[in-house]
Structure formats: C-alpha cells, structure tokens
Amino acid sequence: MFLSNALFGRVWCGYFCPQTVWTDLFYTVERWVEGDRRDRMKLDAAPWTSDKIRKRVTKHTLWFLIAWWTGGAWVLYFADAPTLVRQLITFQSSIAAYVWIGILTFTTYYLAGHMREQVCLYMCPWPRIQAALTDTEALNVTYRLDRGEPRMSLKEANHKRSVGEPAGDCVDCNQCVNVCPTGVDIRKGAQLGCIQCGLCIDACDAVMTKINRPTRLIGYDNDDNILRRARGEKPIYRLVRSRTILYAVVMAVVGGIMLYQLTHRTHMGLSVLHVRAPMYTTVKDGVRNGYNKWSEPRKYALEVSGVKGAVAKSEEADVGADGRLVVSVDPDATQEVQLYVTAPRDSLTGSGEAITMKATDLTNGETSTVSDHFFGP
Image (cartoon, rainbow, N blue to C red; front, side, top):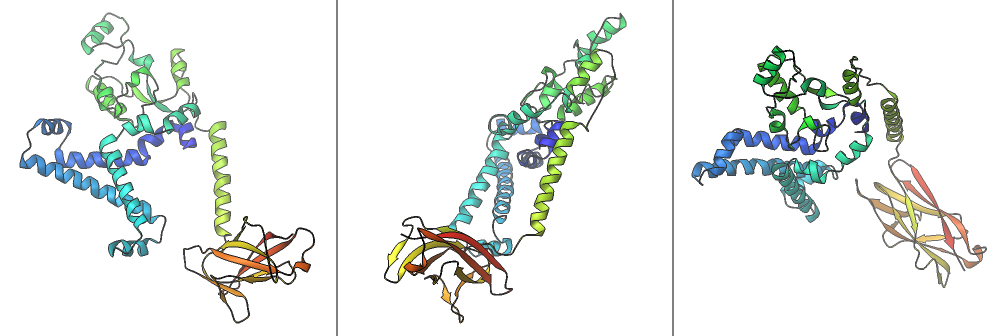
C-alpha cells in the first residue's frame, strides 16, 4: 500500500480495496435487477406492486448470498476448510463458527449494500494515512488547471476563442461530480474523498470528445507537473525515485525473511510457561514446580533435565513403556498440559536451578527444547 501510494496515489482504494470491490459487485447486482440509476429512482418512487417486491427481494437475496459466501470464506481461513464445511452442513461445527459467519455476512451486506462509499469517507483510516505519505511526484487523479480555467459554457468559450481571449476547456458540465462515488469535485484539488477510481476521467474524456477538445483534462498527474506547465515546461514523470526504491527494498527484505522462515519452519513447537502462583510447592518428597506446555501435532514424549533427580508427572499425559510422559495432540491443534516437576530438596543450590523441557515427536524423532527456571526455598 505504501509503494502503490508513492507511485499512483490512492489507487489501492479505487481498484483493490475489498470495500470498493464488494461495493462495485453489489452495484452490478443492483443494476442487473433494477436497471440503471434513472430506473431505480422511478422504482423507489413507485407504489409497492408485485413487480417492485420481486425486484427488491431478488436484489437483497443476491446481496445476502454474496455476503454469506464472503463471511464463510473469511472463516475458512482460520480452520481446515473441507472439515469445517462438512461440520457446517451437518450442524456439528462450534457455535463460534456460525456466529462469526453471521457477523461477517451482516457487515458485508450492510457496508457494501447500504453504507458503500460512506465507509471510505468516515470509517476508513487509510485516506488520512495516505494524505500524510503522499508527495508531489505521486500520480493522482488531477484536474489540469492550466487547461481548464477559466471555465465557462461551450458557447461562451467558442466566442472567447474567436476574439482571441483566453477560455478554458472545462465547460462546467459537472459530469465529473455526478459520476464520483463520494461526490468529490476534483476541480477543487486533491481531497480525502477521492478514491482514485478514475470515473471522472472517463466522464470528462467523453465530454471533451463530443466538443472536439483534447482529452485528459482530468487525468493521472502530479503536483510538480502542474507547476511545470504553468512555467511553460514539459511534464516529468519519475516512478523510480528514492521513496519508491526504499519501499521496494523493504518489501524485498521482508519478503525474503518470510520466505526463509517458511522454507525452514519446523513441524512442531514447544512453549513453557512457569506457574507463578505459587512459584514452588514443598511436598513430602521434595520441591514441586508447575509448568504449562503446548505443542502441535501427533504424539510427543516429554522429558525434563538439568535438575538432579527431577521427576515429571501430568494428569493429561500417559506414561510410555520407557517411563516418559506421552501427550497426544490433534492435527491443526494446540494442547495445554499441566506439568508437575518434583526434585529432591538436596539437589537444589541456592534459590533454584535451570531446567530444560524437551518434547520428542515419536513419529520422526524431531525434538524441541525450552529452558526455564526451577525455583526452591
């Protein structure tokens, strides 16, 4: 988003933002069911007939189906998709899955179908962020003041030109304002409401073509070029500059780190959390400490070392043939195990010893170790 902003301004909002994409999709459904804007205005004013009810029910049903599909797709990111789909169909899934699908369905339906571009104006933080990030060389949807002003009607402009007086190409038709989703008048300069969708460019080009004037009175341009044209200089476009190079380098470095982590990731993980209340407990056979352990997947053998005579016990683990604790963990799951480690009092020096926890994957022998502290009096 930072790089695209440095190159083409708020182009993310106009072409890639999910809110924009879903709003455009909902608009498409609305036009397909109810017709263009004029037809929809007539339908709004018309009495409730069977045809109006049919169109409204069809539109909102399709909106809900799209929103429901969206909500389901989001939830499937956080679970095994085929398994969750089967559970949803057979009503065996957790209540959390149904609740989140419902929440995402409603928010998609309401934001894309009803609030639409109001989300861009009042809810989204990106317009404020990109306003602070942009510079004078970023390409933004821009009204060319040097060509458009002074604006006047086509008839008046033709008369002015015939007598050698200055006249701008803008005929003040307001088509750029009429087609803008957020109601921005781009002729007033860059504004937070502009999502860089370019609809005003297309509308203006159509008018310029009809009146036999050059197109791109509104187009992608930068602030520096406006000043250059005012001085009679040629415009300059620099997509490759220090800012864009910096963003590209940062992206490459972060991407490389992510790729390295992905290719070198392990198939299991171990984290040990020492129970803080109490730090230790004195029992008849020595001193006991409590630990909380989680991992993934399959069966793991748990061992402790570092403290002489230390013995580990857990109610959640089985005891294997070799005496080690064995924990079973389901795929795509984490398992919390309360682990109690007991050591003879005379094995401790001072207030405690360093202790090491090791989990061994019984399938492939892969191990993971974590160090912690064993406290004593």
